Length: 423
Image (cartoon, rainbow, N blue to C red):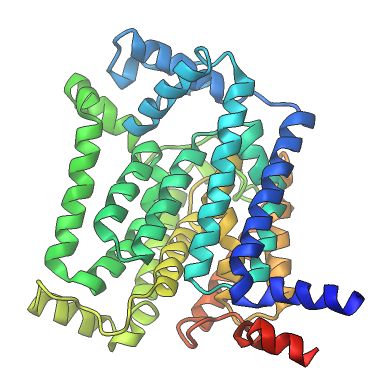
């Protein structure tokens, strides 16, 4: 009996034919866990009330972003955020029915887990990796105990990644644009996305996709742009925004004066651009003969694909999530809700390194710990930066050698019948 149980556990964990059974159990289990959290852990008000006050002003006819403000500050999110919270305002009795809002966000969280499972399946991630997805205390809090708008952007990003994995690039760019219309943070994926589109389609199609991205943003924001273009762009897409030092998670070991200085911001931007260029030059195009050859093909034959190596689902998710990770590392300030930007990507990213299993788990655990220290400390911030940098270095040296960078068990290649015979 014990041997049979162990056999089926191994099948669930390692045999890819049982992936969807494992995924279904993880999604169901996490759905139950999420309901228990909402039942027994108190809700904490942070930004939800402000979101609803913003919508109150919007419903009264205000379209100038300068005049839309609330208890915790002005409206600083693009138009998609407004439309989503207009609907939530209607469903939740102008935001007063917080329990109803929590249920909506609970469903959103379960949907995010399901989307990640599909993304992981396409990337050929081992079954057992899914067991790591429900373990983040902070991520549950961001969704159902805080109701942050980052959750909506995340869903659209995940759907976009899945579309790009499936080579549905026209659908993917629309979904990515929706993510960007909720929160500007989605722009961190753009460098990796440009590489994917350029290699897969060439110059002309890449330009076309970027025009679609710009046009959808313009259409969604039309009423706000008509009211006051400058205030909309300044508030919704302010790349120079300075966050309060007291909320930073990632740079607590830097003194406040340095943190707020323009020189610090410029240094981070330089580091961000430098690392992106390094990955573009030496990692993302290695299978195509190097970035110079990719650019040469793309410019010489702008209507045809510029890459030679397959732009497959594994490559797509690895490049996009690495691009996002680089942006997170060099972000001027990370607030607690920003953990949602990459929390569900950590199991995949650590497996794109060549680190032993214990090191991979230590990196995930260290990052989770740092995001759960409140208020952040120099130690927690230092650990977060160190873990993120080590993971990025691991991806650098683990990529692109090998199709799948994690060491998948041979059991994933064995049929259930053969496995039972081996027992």
